[in-house]
Image (cartoon, rainbow, N blue to C red; front, side, top):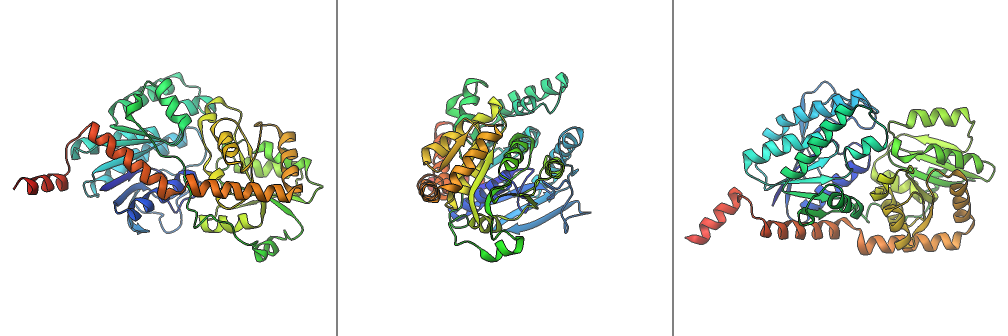
Length: 424
C-alpha cells in the first residue's frame, strides 16, 4: 500500500511527533509499503528554519527511503499569534507539496495542528482516497486547558473545525487509550471509526549501553549522578518543578541534565540562573542515537507533566525511550503515563507539580541501585514485549484493513487494475 503522511513536524527536527512519525514511516517501509511525506521546512523547536533549508520555497529529499516534500512555513517559537500564523502558513503551502505526490492509497494527517485536516480532506476528495486523522493531542481542549488563548471567537472556530475534521475523516487514529476514550465519550466519535497507534520505540537505537565515560569527562560529570530529561521543554511539562527539585538535591552530587528545546526553555534557563542552581545543565537538542548515549551515563530518566486533567490521557513518548534504554523512570504525572510506568514496574510515579515528592523519589532511586537496576530491566522487557514499532505498526495495519473491509471506499488505480485482471 502507498501512504502519504501530512504533518507540520518531521525529521531532522527533534521532538516527540518528529521521532514518532519518522519511526512510523520507516516501519511502514520495512513492512513492504511505500511512504511519501509532505511537511514544513524544518524549524522546530528553534523557531527558525534550519541551515541548508533557508531561503527556499520547497525542498524534495529522501530520508531513510522516505520521499519528503518540504514547503515554506512562517517559522516561530512559542504560543500566540505567531504560532497561529505558522500553522496557517503551512496549511496553505502544504497544497504545493501535495500536488507533487503520487496518488496514495491512504492519507495520514497529523493533528495538531488541526488545520492540516483541511488540505488533507481536499486532496482525498480529488484523489478519491480515504483520510486517517492521527490525533496526537486533543485540540482545542489543550489550548483551553493550558490557557493559550482567551478568545471565545477563536475557540468556537476551532471547535467547529474539530467537529468537521472528525466527521469528514474516514478513520481517526489515537495515540493513547486515554485519547481514544475522550474521542468516544466527549467528542461523540463512533468507536468503530477509531484506530489505536500508541507511541513506540526502536529497541535497536534505544537500548542499554555501557556508560560512555568519555561523555562524562566531556561535561565533567565523573563524580555526579545524572538525572536526564530529554525532550521538548514546553508549557505542558511543568519543568519549573523539576528545577525546584534540583534545588533540594544540590548538595547530594545529583546533577540534572536537560536536553532539548521548546517554548519554555529560555524561561527555564533564566530561572535556573536566578536560583543559582549549580547542579543543572541545559544542552541543545540531539538526535535519537545521541540521546541513547546520554542515557548510558544517567541513573534515571525524568518525565513530567503539569497537573492538568486533560494531560492524564497522554502517554509521554519519552517514557518508552527511558525504559528501552534500561533505565528507571521517575514520572511526575497522573493518568495513562503513570499507569504505563506502574504496569511495566519500570520506575516510580509521584504527583505532578510537587518538587519535594519528586526530589525524594529521585533520591530513593539513586540510593538503591539494585532496585533501580531491576526497574530498568523490567522496563526494557516490557518495551520488547509490547511497545516496539514493528509490532505496533503491524497491529495498526491490521486495524486499517479490517476497517476498510467493513467500510469500503473507492478503489485505487492499483486495486482497479488487479480487479480487472481477475475479471479477464
